[in-house]
Amino acid sequence: QVTLRESGPALVKPTQTLTLTCTFSGFALNTSGMCLTWIRQPPGKGLEWLARIDWDDDKYYSTSLKTRLTISKDTSKNQVVLTMTNMDPVDTATYYCARTYYYVSGTYSNYYHTDVWGKGTTVTVSS
Amino acid sequence: DVVLTQSPLSLPVIPGEPASISCRSSRSLQHSNGNHYLDWYLQKPGQSPQLLIYLTSTRASGVPDRFSGSGSGTDFTLKISRVEAEDVGIYYCMQVLHTPPAFGQGTKVEIK
Image (cartoon, rainbow over all chains, first blue to last red; front, top):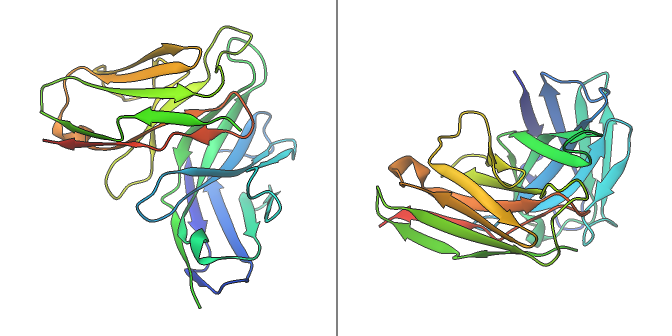
């Protein structure tokens, strides 16, 4: 059974750096094709894709946020960490991590399949 | 970046009646292998999003067959043949062909 759990501070001040951790079980991030994605959702708004780290340590970021985001993994701990610098009140949101599987070849080559999400962690940015 | 535009943004439905949601992409979502890399998610009230349809038309495990997806190129549709009360929530399309991936704005389905 695949599970993911996001953790981090519920409240951060403007200009601070946010560090979020996704702890997962039921799969291994060092398995070929396995990836981990972060998505966020401001209150009452839609979903925004943030970043992804792949089994081979390739990393991909949102175009608008790439200067502020860093994603990393610790396969021994089954954890992925997302940091976001220079936090602002507009970054107030629920942050989700989700398992993603990459089909390297075959019928669905180059397809990133995101299937299981965590429950999310709510982050408020306020002084 | 690819932009996905959903319509309508709000969809009041009557139980037992059909419903349809459109998702249009600013770029073609067809891979060279012929598949279209467009997924659908449903976020029920108070819950995380759940995968509904992947690769345009394949239902995820456990998804009732009243849900169907179709489309090609830049135009995609999610249909519910007969809406049930448990189908309320916000539906999102997501493209995964181009980097970075992107979501549509979401369509809120509620019971009329």
